[in-house]
Image 1 (cartoon, rainbow, N blue to C red):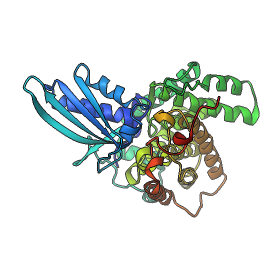
Image 2 (cartoon, helix red, strand yellow):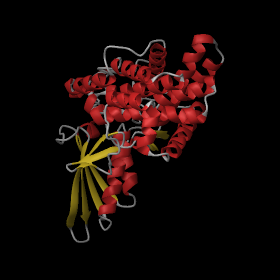
Image 3 (cartoon, rainbow, N blue to C red):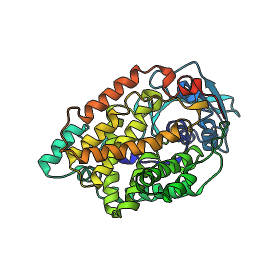
Image 4 (cartoon, helix red, strand yellow):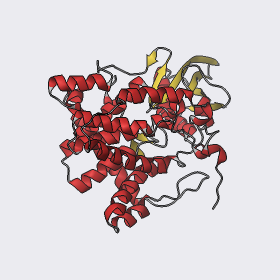
Amino acid sequence: MLSIREIFKKGYGPSSSHTIGPARAAEIMLERYPDANYFVVQLYGSLALTGKGHHTDSAIRKSFLPKQVEIEWFNDKSLPLHPNGMIIKAYNHEHGTIMGEWEVYSIGGGDLRDSTGLINGKEIYSINTLTEILAWCKSEGKTLWEFVEDNEGKEIWDFLSDVWRTMRETVKRGIDNEGVLPGPIKLPRRASAQYTKAFNTHGTMKHIGLLFAFALAVAEENAAGGKIVTAPTCGSSGVLPAVLFYLNSEESISEQKMLRALATAGLIGNIVKHNASISGAEVGCQGEIGTACAMAAAAMTQLMGGSPAQIEYAAEMAMEHNLGLTCDPVLGYVQIPCIERNAIAATKAYSCAVYALSSDGGHKVSFDQAVKTMAETGHDIQDAYRETGIGGLAKNWEAFS
């Protein structure tokens, strides 16, 4: 597996695979062909079908500035290695020649790959399943965050401290911001009002309401193109920060413990990414929200004193009960059902953690089996329900108010 640094990327929404990934590809092409003065970017599959709603064209144009760029959309074609494929061509108009081209894929979470493999990816973990990692924890007498530290080095804590700082800032910014999100849906922000209402109630309504508010805050910031941390993607970036922010405010947990929970969450996301996919275009939203929910459930279980077995159980439960979740963004925007989905997943993660903590950690289906099932389910899902914007709610939606 790669570093968990590849799970937690700071960037701007609304989509890690549709904005962060293509922007990185554009920057790489600029570095490879600095003398080129004109670029053509051909977008295929999901990148073409939902690219305008996901601001893919804007991200690409910004990355190529001040060079000229033309974007071509191939809605009815896909490239062979992944639904999020693109071909970038570099030209020098002065000499009337094409300088080079690159077929590259945005595979989820802002990562890129081409025919040679991952771009800028370095394997640092030799154990890649949670079953094996749990066996290591038992033999070494250590827990999951210590496994991360042993593989990543102590410098990972400075990185995670910056991640946690950015997550907190995004929640606070999202709570303060009001108004209408960009795009033709004209969806009003709700995090601010939700927070005020929740804060002034009590009991269950207050606790669930605050979780909703914190998740909505991040998801709305993402939908508006604000700065977020992928966890593991932009579209699912509200789940983990919501749970951690809520626990931090309610339980007065030290920053050191919060960072350890982030390490465990990153490990869970890493396992899914390595053994299955976190790309909505490849496996549906179960790969995004399902993974985010598992990450948050594992992090909370650890924070509340859970054993490695209980952490594994919470993560498995969270993944299991998101199986089959489709990716069907209305009009191609990361707004409906994406924003509310973050809020629901945050409460589901909380519930899974509570359930696992009340058990001895024993259960019948392993996390690794749930991840394998998610990948198989995702590949069985029709293309219409995998971030193409042509099926599900995206097909049947129309404004009714």
